[in-house]
Image (cartoon, rainbow over all chains, first blue to last red; front, side):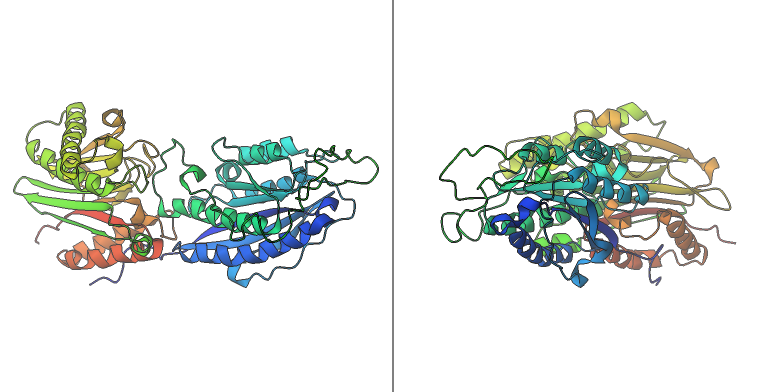
Length: 269
Length: 246
């Protein structure tokens, strides 16, 4: 009786990146607090997704972005060891999403093309429109991400917060017409969507660990095979007021003008 | 014939957790003039609800066809066409038994096979999975196809399956000692990309020490380790040449 054949078995690492908007507008209507709470709720959900995917180890990092982008969680951290430290919005900060994408792109470039790696998961959360004060601008940064070996293969999800979220740019980030970005208009929805997007991204990337045959003609992660999010635990017609659809004011010299108020009675984000 | 065959499949821990059936299949044949193995990996997808049947029937179809074509030169194109057509007939019949409207994609599966007959080896695959052989003395590992050869959308149900299928022959001059086929659930948890060399080396040690028969009892536990760790169903088929008695 031979104990085993071949090399040792090893987990495959799934690198998970959160790109989180901390622009000035996130300070309004409790959005940043809701995002921090949603992150705390998402981490156990990611842990559950990891537990249900044998042979996969999820390592989490987070980038915060406003007029700059920086690593909020710089070390790839096992999800069970992660303690969420609250994000703080930048007063009058703009939304340089391109800088955040650029940080992740550089990380992914360093991965090379390891055969045993899993496609990373990237979840972008923003309440505004990408601003273009610094380079790389959003579209150029996104193009560079998608051109990277692992950037193009990544499971990408996006969540817009409130009325001012630029859903078109979030759809560009996903870069798959079959998948629409999620739109949260209140805290309960944000928590629900972030948990859902995070676990779906882990599941989608882990599929390649189990090496199931994609049916869409590519080896990239196919999020269209996964279920859409169900209703939030908190019905949207009850509970907390819909405060995130109030138009936000982005102040500061050189900032883009606030969008027009289209609904005087609006009470949601 | 100094050749032995072994084959086994195991349910993956992820599938077990979800209550999914074993969607892999494996089989082998030993006849006086033929030794053959085959493994198949039914596609896990809501569009492929009968892939476990598809995998089982793919293995049965290719073993039957190898038995029928074991004598004479191999007409590769005809073999591929007959295999795909035979599988289609089998799954159509199965769809009738199930009372389900026939659509080949519902039975989608990969297929890897190997046979030693008539002085040569025939190796074939469609879809992903691993296939390698050792040739020469000292042994070298050769992989006629990369693991992702015609992977992606090309499984045996695909309209271009016969064209996409890979078939190679190795004659006895190649001094083949081991032929190994596996569904991708077997190797995906290995820590090394070069696992074929280590697996081949371990197998050669077993064979050269005269313990070939032990493979039969060990193979299920070897596969189970991968299936438990990686989560996917795993299957292996193996043909080995026993050393000549000294």
